[in-house]
Amino acid sequence: MEELVRIIAKALVDHPDDVAVRTIEKDRLVVYELTVHPDDVGKVIGKQGRIAKSLRTVVTSAAVKMDKRVTVDIIS
Image (tube, rainbow, N blue to C red; front, top):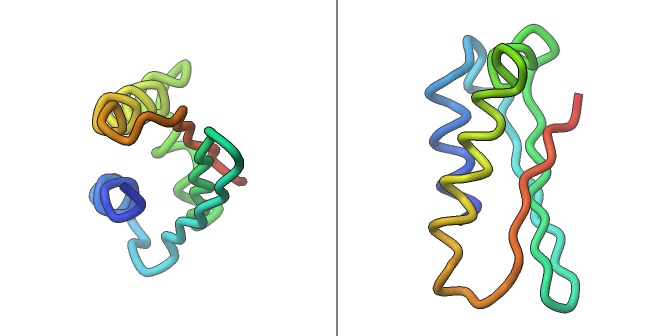
């Protein structure tokens, strides 16, 4: 799942080498913290947060089989 977030983020940004994903696991929650270059934060979030919402939807849909709650946080 972490690799999925990384691949999607690298496709969106101008500085793909600066994309980093950190996984934090708690009881039944998995948080993926996405860090990108400061110039690329707007591209990952999108207008009115549409791209960020789409990214979260894709990851949540892919995580259905994990039987855990999954979220993506964009760290600016």
